[in-house]
Length: 323
Image 1 (cartoon, rainbow, N blue to C red):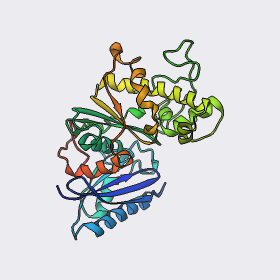
Image 2: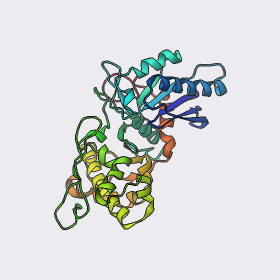
Image 3: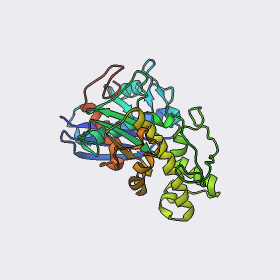
Image 4: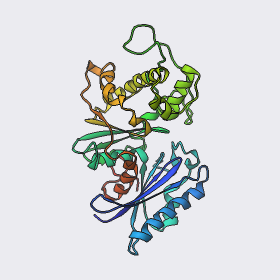
């Protein structure tokens, strides 16, 4: 395998790495994302590629894989479902190929994350891996036998935009006595109401805490501060997460679930989530391990570089990326 470049296009930062044929990162760069400015985003990505190539490319044009906060609509080849909304409706892949004067590989950032973790991360050796992003948004991706699954709508793993099965609040937790009461409904940027993302993302966790306690703090603060209020907010969050992941288990039944994103750093998830899922999984037992990522925040960009090492294509079945 020759060296490849991976780019992780996030809502606040763009990361780039040069990965050698052994899977070792030889160089990495990170810049702020030009939020809301499409053409500047194209130039920023191109600048990262050119900088990495200048240092290590030995005069060659290296292959480039890019992870994006959405997916490419197969028929029209424009971006869809990006929470970085200035990308939606834009021919990102085509514009980057023109700017970089080469073909590129492109996939959803959650797909890149799960590809990285399935190949040589926490999911290595498992026949099926469901990767989850719990960060500024909520995404997912599925790998079967080392290959990303891509369906005809380019929506595989998009559980973040399915309806949340329950909107619990304190005093109404599944498995405890007392009637369930609901958090208020939330409209998603995608136009639907009560998507999983609106409750299980970092901003969603902060919104739940604000609704319960009237305190406006970040998800990171809630996860770290240790107050009674924060603990109860996380208790509500855990039950909602368990219900949502149980839907994935009931439909896909993956051999392992790997969590990524900022909320994946919350320690109690790994001690508590599987028993909570058993309240919702069909037949009342869950044997699916839920684990931390091996590569942490680097998984997405490593997976983007690995897109160039994969085979596959077409509009159905399993494929590595959108080519």
